[in-house]
Amino acid sequence: MSRIIKLALIAASLAAASPAAAQFAACVDGLRTEAQQLGVPGDVFDRVMRGVTPDPKIIELSEAQPEFVTPIWDYLASLVDAEKVADGRKLLKTYDHVLQAAEKHYGVDRHTILAVWGVESDYGKLAGKWSLPQSLSTLACTAPRRRDYFRSEFMATLKIVARGDLAPEKLRGSWAGAFGHTQFMPSTYLRLAVDGDGDGRRDLVDSIPDALFSTANFLRNSGWQPGAPWGYEVRIPENYKGPSGRTSRHPLARWAKLGITRLDGKPLHGAGPAGLILPAGAEGPAFLVFKNYDAAFSYNGATSYALAISLLSDRLKGLNGLKTPWPTTDGGLSRAEKREVQRLLLQRGYDVGEPDGAIGAKTRAAITDVQRRIGMPEDGRPGQRVLGALRGG
Image (cartoon, rainbow, N blue to C red; front, side):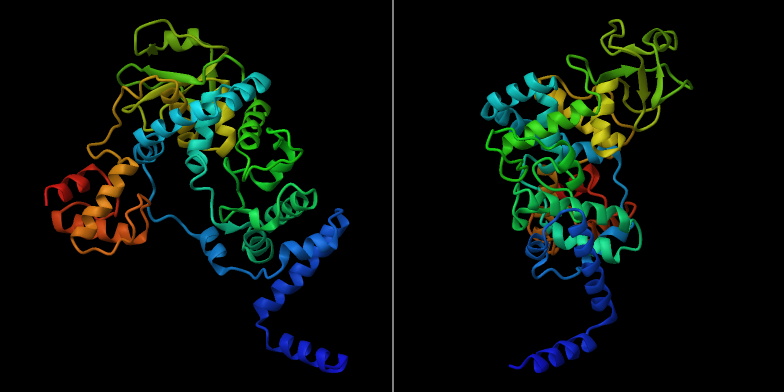
């Protein structure tokens, strides 16, 4: 085929391309130029982007407004359940030498390192399916907001490949770009990922030692204090109206004067000032939290997340769970109970897919129908009342 014919075919192809495709192609050209200016070789860029096209589903997910806001008792019931604790205790033994080494080197409690792994990816079982080159280039070029942020994360992804740590096909994670056993964003990877197994690479996908050491390094850099508690559950006076919040820090003596006590009646203890968090209001569990809670908070920036890490770490140590009940008459479900709900719905003819404990649109629709039939608010929430109704037929 002559060069003229080839050019004519290319021109025809471009003319037939949709404006969106042409816009994406132009953006990718700009990404390639920027990457080269940052020292990423052109052949690395081409290898990473080979066959990559924009995925509208990524934009849909980035724009989705959750229809169902998860109460904290639902969130914790799934993330700090008997399965998670049992699996974690097995892994404590399996990776004892790795966790001990990470704890010794970084000063971070091994149970907290393991808890991050459990909450972030269920110990590697749910690390994500999205291709980072595709998701981040889609977001960098077509997202309605935060394009500069995703562009920066895309460049960090290229640098990871360029330095030889990971091949492009290994870079799979969340739609927003977090990947690996403990879900680092690419820029976080570049700053804080470390080589835990001594092979000269930083591989948070296939090397569990790398992932655990990197997590310990993250927490240390977030202000973790060796040997100090994250916090503990406390009792507050009835009709408490005093200060609260993670950042409203006061000496323990002041909290004691306000009537805050430990559940066992012993004196308040801990290093430095503490904050009082009331994740479900004054009627639910209350916690005094310290700097190590902040370190967990920095991983995700949510009270419920940091509490899941902290409570799971306690359970992995063999400590008891919460004593104060959540202020609800319809508690949350563990993953085993969610699978049971799905199996019972399948038995009744509802199409909810595989009973895997992941509550998606089909399961919520089926639950909403059950709620309508038994006179409950129709919100699609999988709680204890729905499970009880299904068990009772």
